[in-house]
Amino acid sequence: MSSAEAQPPVSRDVRLGGGGIELRPLDVDHAAAFHEAVCESAAELKGTVPWWRPDATVADQEEWAGFTRDAWAKGTLYAFVVLGGDGTLLGACSLEGVDRRRSSANLSY
Image (cartoon, one colour):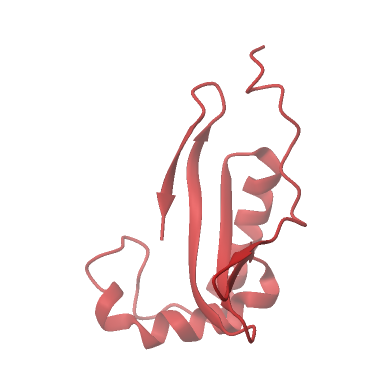
């Protein structure tokens, strides 16, 4: 086992901040605000991201948040919300396709 594979799991208590924004792990509590942001950005998202659909619901976002929590625990995906200084959800980003052996991942935002 390489040293990269032997690393402990990343805590969901992680907070990354600076410049008036903070990244926090995506959670079910963010589902309604995330859904609102997706609806607000529909024109920009349509045709540019494979997951966008016009009939998405808050329940879909809750399901996605649950999936990302499980994937976080496995170390395969780290999904974050981007919050403004006042706590307003500004967007989201994630590290996907995490490969600890190669110390690589894809950044999605």
